[in-house]
Image (cartoon, rainbow, N blue to C red; front, side):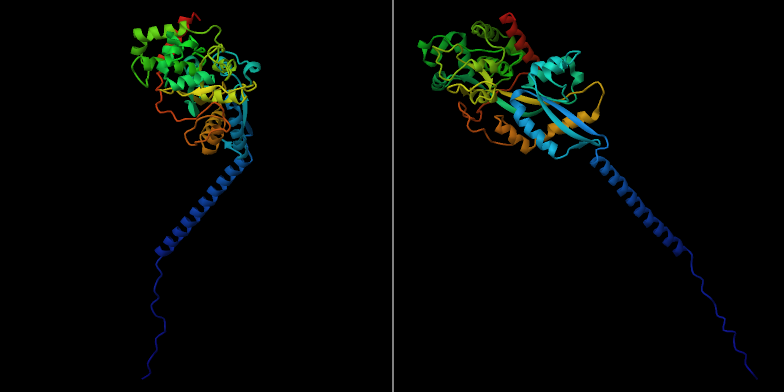
Length: 401
């Protein structure tokens, strides 16, 4: 009997669909990630290109500084500009101008800006001390775009012709000694009674931070608080009132309005018997500039000596950004960026080479006649703003100004 073969058609195994679905999802996900990355890269490249091309245009940053800062800040601005700084799609270029701090403060606290007197209205301002930023904060705080950023400091020295400086050094004079000499002890306070009275010039403390700090140093040491700060209780005390009255009463005639002008009346060859001013408190950097003839006048025939007295006060040089009526945030941001740049080591070196003290660099200009650049052994803690204002008010009242 014949046998029949099968047809050869066996059972066919079906392929499951879910792996294909998963694979499809993976592929789509990968493509999505790659696409998003490509899109993100494209957006970033476009933003970079817009910034590189300065799509917002050039932004000129007007920076106004006191005269002693013109040289180092201009050099720092040139370096900053060469790095092609950009803020909010703007290419930024800093332009440094010089103007008296009083003129800038007057303009920023009044309704009108006098460009002939103070130059272009600044977006960043570095005055010759915190006297002016304090005034701005009290009279027109709305114009301040940032808190003061201290970019440099300078100790307050007693500027004295060479012969007088030698006598004060031999007598190991302090600010308390100087106060006693000015109030009546005269040069006898350092064993030079034959020289007569001691003529200490104190230019207006409302305009001269060195004068204000020198008064505080005398009040602190004479009032028993050592390195300060002078407090309301000390200032209201009978001793402080007598101290201020005696110092004001002993002021030489025709005291110049600023310490810089007082320095220009002095010469290192003068003695207490020949000079019109025996001493004036000044910032170290201003004395350096006077002795090397960088303050607009020829250097003196002999340098005036700068004595660091204990406790040593210090003038601060603050940068603030200044708002304008437009509410332009890019300019404010650029001003803050430039301020940060001035605190970097390279800029700090420029400031040190110009005679300022900075935290990150220990360097001094050479030559620098009349200066020892010593590190203060004891520093004065400055008074609070309200006490500082009260000292100035009482001083002016005593002088009838």
